[in-house]
Amino acid sequence: MREELMHNPHDMDWLNHAVPPALVDRLRRLAWDVEFSEETVLRHPEWTLRRVLDYGQWEDYEALALYLGADRMRALLRQVRCETPRARSFCKVLCS
Image 1: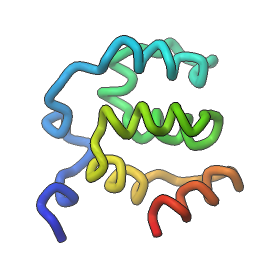
Image 2: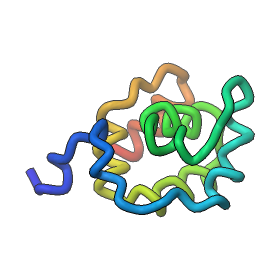
Image 3: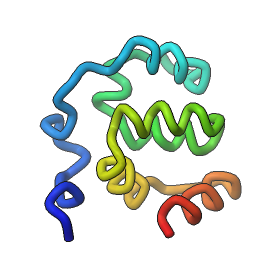
């Protein structure tokens, strides 16, 4: 397994740069029931990804993937529970 995939996505070290304000603004509409901020993305990347998979558009996924990077995104995809049929289909395609 490549070293990048061995990082624990729960560790704050795996994110070494600030969340772009444009990303927070873009994803805020997917978090109607919580106060969404840069800290949400940093502290709860799995939750953020799950919201994107369940309610987002392809462009939301691309924006989050651009910020996280491909290896980190794949690591998170392996950990996220895809509960909706839409999210399961999306995860199946992305993880294959």
